Amino acid sequence: MAGWALWALLSAFFAALTAILAKLGLRGVDADFATLVRTFLIFWALLAFVGLSGKWINPLSLPGPTWLFLGLSALATGASWVAYFRALQLGEAHRVAPVDKLSVVLVALLAMLFLGERPSLRDWLGIALVTLGVLVLVFKR
Image (cartoon, rainbow, N blue to C red; front, side, top):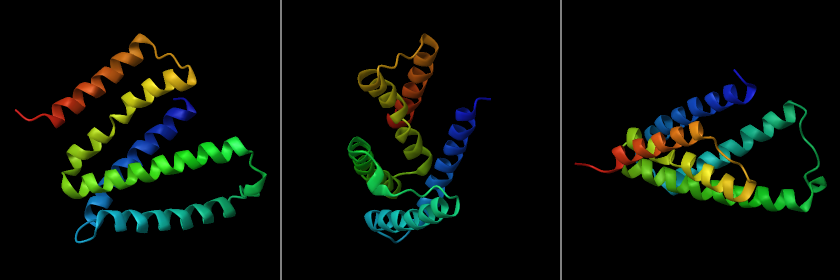
């Protein structure tokens, strides 16, 4: 298994845990406030991780484009988390999480547009199956 695949599987596992634990944590709490608490905790955990692992560098040494794209990514992440927590508060986790994975399709399209990536026919088959799965979950009979 390629190194990236192991990390991607770990990401999927922790994303699944995130959905379940967040759904449990949202009981009686506003979704936006819960997102703020979660973000605060993530900040401190990552600060400790980066510091203890010796990966800290002076943030001012980062080039301008890095700041721009990481900043835009942070805004997109924040918007995603707010929407995700709101969806979890309103819906069932087993339906919300797969719909959230429609991002797989959007990543493929945006990667083609902005990064010049070209998914293979096999890749598109997998992407189409994800799309089909989302449609099955979203539309009731």
